Amino acid sequence: MDWSALSCSRNGHLTFAPDEPDLRAELGATLPGATAWRCLRCGTFVPGPATLSGPASTAPVVPRGKEIRSKLVLRLFALERYARALLFGALAVALWRFVANRASIQAALNREMPVVRDIFSDLGVNVSHSTIYGLLQHALTLSGRTATLLAIGVTAYAAIEVVEGTGLWLARRWGEYFAMIATSLGLPLEIYDLTRKMSAIAIVLLAVNLALVVYLVITKRLFGARGGKAAYDARLRSESVLEAAENAATARRRPETSAATGSAPPDSSNPRATSAAGTQRAEAAAPQGTATHR
Image 1 (cartoon, helix red, strand yellow):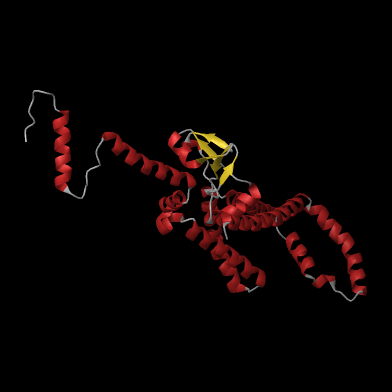
Image 2 (cartoon, helix red, strand yellow; image 1 turned 180 degrees about the vertical axis):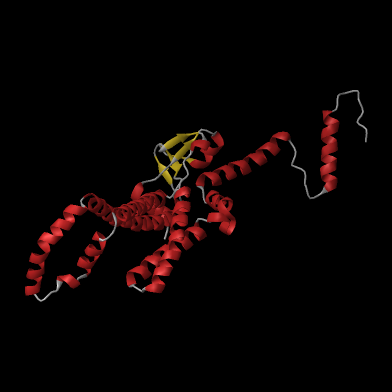
């Protein structure tokens, strides 16, 4: 699948007209009655004025090919992080309300529980043995300090998930490092919980976290993996349309420079030719009336 063309079909082309004449010749093309500029994403020449213009140093860094697919994968992980943030955020709100209104909750439970127990007893359900009732009773036995610390911990976890999701959604380098470190720190606890009690949800969550850590380390080359950031940036440059145009412009300037001097560049593989060419240039540059010592 051509991810660059797919992205352009959804988001439109992104063309750039550089101020440098040699780069304009590489990225621009003259059509009958119009000018076309090469898209920095898919590489197609698009008729009409360029989307952006300016010095080449101000050109945007445009993801291409596999980088677009990688960004899509990171956004899927980001959505999963946002879902966790919503879940734990709602739990944090409930815990803070519980801390603030603990006495009233206890009074309401004592007042309404006999009625609720009788209603469910007629249906053949013993509410006193239900999981929800057990959790509520256990929560009421917690001290005020313990309940507050639990609410703080759940709130902090929800905030961490928001930061992870934002960094992954924006595909920022800091977000990738943050998500990888934060997720790795939680893996030992998840594995320990699985050794105590196996559950399908816990296994799925562990698999998602492991997949995120491995994916970030391998594809984003974090912590020096596969050459680190230098190799990652080099791969991005090798796929850049603007970088290819700069290399083509540089290669085209070399023959023009040699033709302007009136001589072909010396063959660096032949030491004698290189030495002779250097001697001839020295004699030509020497002032008249002086001898060039050999």
